[in-house]
Amino acid sequence: MKKKNNFDYVIIGSGPSGSVLAYQLAQYGNKIALIDRATNTKKDSNKNSFMFSPYINKSNYNYSPIFSNQLGGNSALWNCKIYLITKDEFDNDNWSFKYEELIKHSKDLAKKFRIDHNHINKVIKYKGFKSSSSLREKKLGNMFDFLKIHSNKSITVFDNSSPIKIIYKSKGHEVSGVIINNIKKNKKIELTIKKSIIFCAGGLGNPNLIQNLFHNYNKNIGKNLCDHSHINL
Image (tube, rainbow, N blue to C red; front, side, top):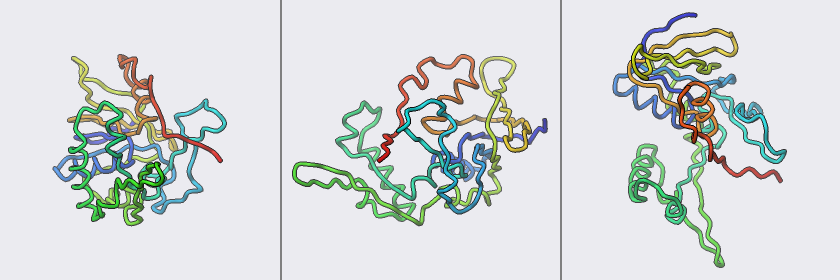
């Protein structure tokens, strides 16, 4: 097992959250390790390469969750779709912050990505029915590619890889490192962590990773997990 240099942060998952977070943390001088199990590392999205979710082994025939199998995660799968939850949808759940805060950050992001925020979260009313429109911005595409993660010298990308063991400091539960396994080469690599390990593997990936890697995880993790609706026509 080859031991790599220290990293300030180790991020699991190179999707929209993982790529954006790695990019932002790198701007503050941090050294980042970005881990992803993607095996298709082509720069351009190829929808023929999409695979059924590796985290689902039993499901109804009509339920077909898929993941992109590309660096950039589901930002490649979503085909540049931008959508913002409406006020009515927001009010149906018990959020720990106000809707105005969401709108503020949404407008800030729209400005940074040069997107017309008026096209996001537009509610259309027709004969008593309401629907939400979304925006497609082809210039965004795969977030990993859009942010040029591969060319960022502060970010080291480990594709074809998944975490298999968490390393703790001698006292307490503070994480000091993680061992990852390169699936393609069957090679184990130890990464040391100065600050934190962050899970950005999405709603289906994070609960499974936590259950597999942490011995004293909360039993409620993943209990009420819900995925997007999937309907085959």
